[in-house]
Length: 194
Image 1: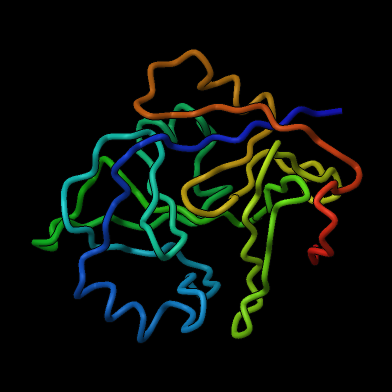
Image 2: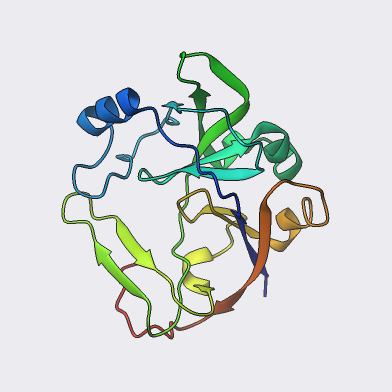
């Protein structure tokens, strides 16, 4: 049985999107109901208001897109992050590319589940699962399969033990590494589609 870890950020400063960029993205790129990016084969280029806080992982609030330090992704995925993640560029408010960070969305996604007080809904427009885990977090064995890298939205990755070991113990700003229980059945009492 393979172990899995949740990699997330404890940064108090998510990467706030530029207002002009967000308005255009809401017209052309994002679901009109849940604001998540419509599925694409490409990464999402994002313009942010400030300067990234140099966290290993972060996210752009309101649109579910992760932001990662390039140096962190090289350590985590030396075989090449593009094998597992759709990567995009990050620009500052002056439209200058910020080469030390990229956006990411996983080719494979997973819902991190919780206990009986958890909740979820399906987006009525795009069908995305919007899940809020409460209590001890876990993943279902059938949802992770033999994957080694999965996107759990909002700048959170779920990775297999061999992948996690590449960054555990490193000095990564604001990185939270949490071992996840792998369960056969959910304990939240919810009928969440796979």
